[in-house]
Length: 270
View 1 (tube, one colour):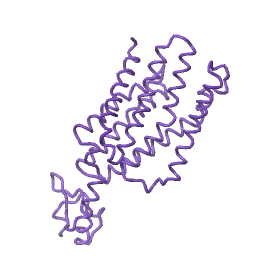
View 2 (cartoon, one colour; view 1 turned 90 degrees about the horizontal axis):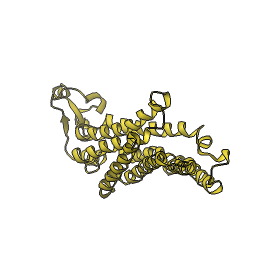
View 3 (cartoon, helix red, strand yellow; view 1 turned 90 degrees about the vertical axis):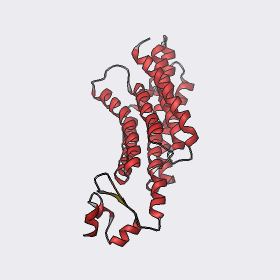
View 4 (cartoon, one colour; view 1 turned 180 degrees about the vertical axis):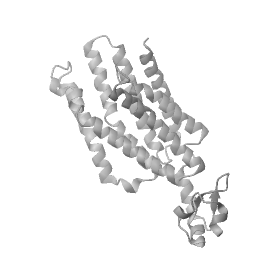
């Protein structure tokens, strides 16, 4: 079996296992969207593997179209996952979320119609490549980059364990993004290796689930409790520099959060 096909099949196993392991945590921010996100990754990887294994042109076309059904909604699901995990729902309201999902849904319907109207793929106008080749990749990159931006903002505002959690998600998202970029610009030629990177990205997610309690203790829950405390609390790192301060402590100090972050504890009382 070719190495790429084997990597794709192993990736299917890893993404499925991580999705199953994360499902009981679906009540946590972002966790409910992890399963459909990984389901798309699994479908893309599995379809790509079966396309490589297929002998006839018709079968290859069938699995190519199946993979497109995963490719199209995946960027939107990634964005919604990042929005939910980072607590940025106010930034994308229901109407905006519906608009973001409308384009992938329309493309998926068009692909389904193409497969029903022309199963043999003889009508070039209904082929997936012309249909998606113009705007879909740019649209997907935009959604993924927007999701990464929400995670980066949460990373900058979090501390200690919660910063590591955001870092894990940023790393997991960056792996397929980097592989796809290398494929687009040229170093990685041949079949698209992006779905083969999902296994590694899922391993990073699994590492976060096991080692850093991803979805068990989230930044949003921590900040809600921390900010609601009736006593002033100042948190420092091992070097005694301020990493976060709750609103009561800021009011007592008469300072804003940007003014105290990174400062030595003694400097707050000068």
